[in-house]
Image (tube, rainbow, N blue to C red; front, top):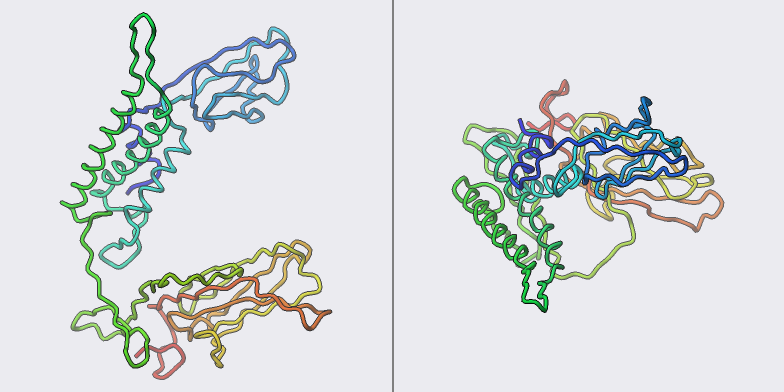
Length: 360
């Protein structure tokens, strides 16, 4: 099973950025509390800082990338300040993990496992771990190449020539090799950014100018309710914009659902109303959220649905939340909107035919 930690360690091995231990020692002068480490970037989490025999790690701060250590107070004159930990050649742990997350998001953007579950780092197949690391290594090397691009060649009057730009060319050669390595692995294994995907072209009805629904194919003996595919619709270069915050809700059918909304203003003197409808302007209200203002002064409220309310919701609908004033009946503001996506349940006690939510 993959994890951020294991993939990060593999990435460090690929780019030769293995951690090394160090110990730095300083002498206090009674006034200085900022010290520059000789080794950086460092792992700030595992850094041990001592003034004499007193551990002050919890009260010290470190700039991991620059190695600048700041103590809570200046050590006494002649006090020995010792710092020990792990340093790296190029990147901090946060930067390495960021490369892994970006590479994984690109590699497994639309990928699912054989059971239809979205691929995550935790369930990433073992055979795909190394390609993700290779892709992450190209991102890290691009950062090094950008840094080296600022170097210029040095030519001295005495004929000495230092081609500093050669480092940039070497890095770009490595990046090209790594990109080709990732492409080859993806092509052979049919994974990642270069895998072959099967898609169904959407048809538009000439009579109604509406898309013809597409349903997921099913096995011959699968008698379950057909699942509609909600394929992203192109914008056709539409310039429509909205100043309403967008937030999509993902829930499981017949499960209770609760989430918190933070408003940038106090809710004192305001009423809240949130509803779910099949589409904007639909007469039928599919569900109305139960709203509880838990902290009016700081603008915090919880929205919830009971299991009975989520049982009858369709797979796709829309919702929004409106704020109205209790003192000004003409004032109204839609604060948040979005799509409600409901995954069909498996276990249920409500199996009567024609009951709400029964799928046959």
